[in-house]
Image 1 (cartoon, one colour):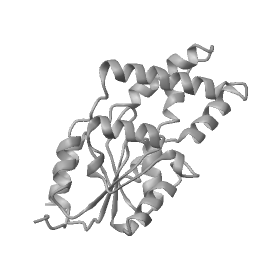
Image 2: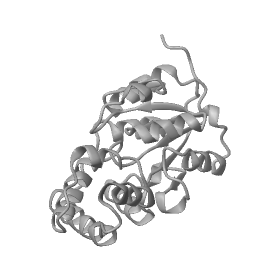
Image 3: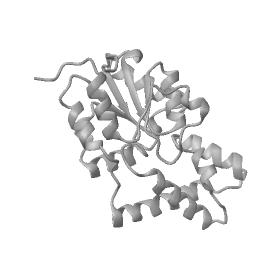
Image 4: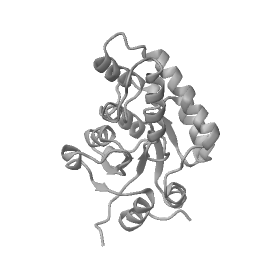
Length: 228
């Protein structure tokens, strides 16, 4: 039996954690950049995982130089991704609905802290019909500093009046894990496209293969009463 932990708030990342959208992002960035004569490989793309638009732009300009037409490539990348979603839908990560249903039965607050834009986040949450599960949603275009800075997590905790030490973060990216750790929260990693490196593994509270495992783990360790 695991030691019980007292948690008031659980914060979800979105892309790669709830939705199978990181692979979609890679495909769409790669195709969009190729149309302008640039190559985005997986190593470069992985540096942008967990980053908001501003930080992603910085990463690409550092790599390609100031002549890289970021805004035009970004627009094309969004168009390509939207077309793929229209045809194939958005992939839901294994265990998402089960985890949210469980958390809805216990006295814990739930939030989304995503590096993507408000418009895109709300669209995906609506498409998956899960927006009503969350007490608060904070997006990448509403903060100044991108993950691995802890700003987004600290703002969520402040808004919901929950102390950092009683907040747990579910993340798939190394940048997100670093941000959660710096915020003084408990980081659980569910890797998507990239396994955590050595430095990230030292920061992780737990590593899980999917959200069903997260549900089972939380059922064992959360010291929280069920909602009557």
